[in-house]
Image (cartoon, rainbow, N blue to C red; front, top):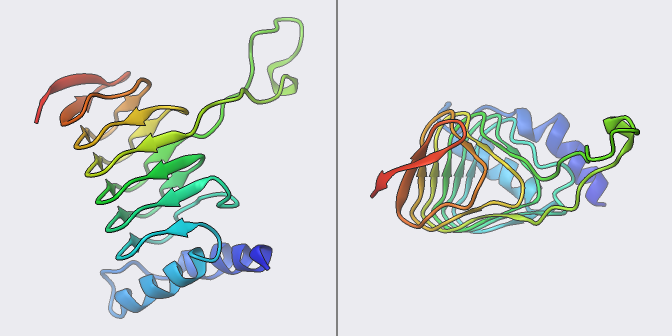
Length: 168
């Protein structure tokens, strides 16, 4: 049955207009209703169009979150009151590359820990989060940043790779 909901989500419901369109709140409610059959989603969540979460097996979203359009989620737990801007990518796996005698595409995938986004986090436009990172409570990540390491709570990060800019 889950496969049917995945097909419905990706071919129909993920393509419905965003919440700011006329009748957008209805479209979001329909999108959430189908997505809840695939992954764990809390209350009062906004998921805009074209959000990708694979099979949904390793993705969970807390309460009062906003996931904007064209976001890609993989192997992540998202806390409460999290805002994720458009085109953000949360990577869930990486390819092995340590054996120089075997082509990288034949080495398989590394074991990585789940990425965790704690409560009250804001990820700006086109942020990339590497696998296994913990983004601590109250963190803001500037647009275009690449998070490669755990953050400190209540801090602002930016750059490639992202570095702490200042405390909030």
